[in-house]
Image: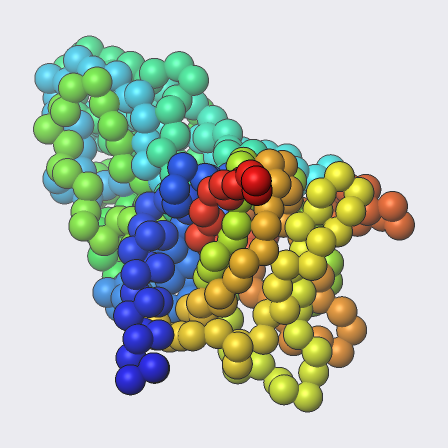
Length: 366
């Protein structure tokens, strides 16, 4: 009976975490939402579809050529936003290029008159649910001229140079890879009036000021978008200024993703709260002390008090079990100096951690 009650309690906690990480008007910033945490720990099903990176060792240009995925020929709208399945990395001296979103006017023998906009996202753009909806800085117009419709395209810089990398779902849809990259037009094969085709579907969905007869978003889009990043073990100390508490309260539960069995002969990771230059121990991540009812998602009960501005620090020492992170698509990671000051790292990995926090009420004794 006690184990059954623990199971029910865990389910209630998961309900509290649905969509936000807050309780009783006491909130946090930056902690991973439960939906993303479950997706990264393998607790949700991606329908058996496989995603693969669009980036190659050289720059590439792609056009979505699937029959119904075109804007109608009488479209007089503008492209204002896109939903994308991408990974986002930090900018370095060598990695500083961005992909472009393009619209091509299709005629019988080629695609021409392109308009384009860079897709500029950064670790500062990270989302707690892992989904990305990007508003174009300038809407892209559809050129009003005789044609067979408009096609959406993507320019992808080389893999090692691109801050953002698009992904595709293999085995479904149809896209064309442009052999001769030019800025003004893409010529089709004179015999079959096509470009080099493959059976794939780029994770991008357009949003226009009018519908322009483009098909609705596919039901698996979000699930596939969440699957583009990997989970990695991390065995060092990292601090996260963008993951913090925005109230004075009490953490009642930590929800943590642990994707491999812990080695009981090793030490365990520790979670701290950084308050100014002080580090306050909050939790030892020993899975045997937690409740799990959903695969690799573990619930740790807690009564640690937090203050406004406390930030997350994760410490993993030598000969310790690792913590698990989503690789990329998270906030900037920092290390600590000898005075607990912040030193930026070239990482934006995202720890698999959610919390439930309640507001702390002070009572006056008489």
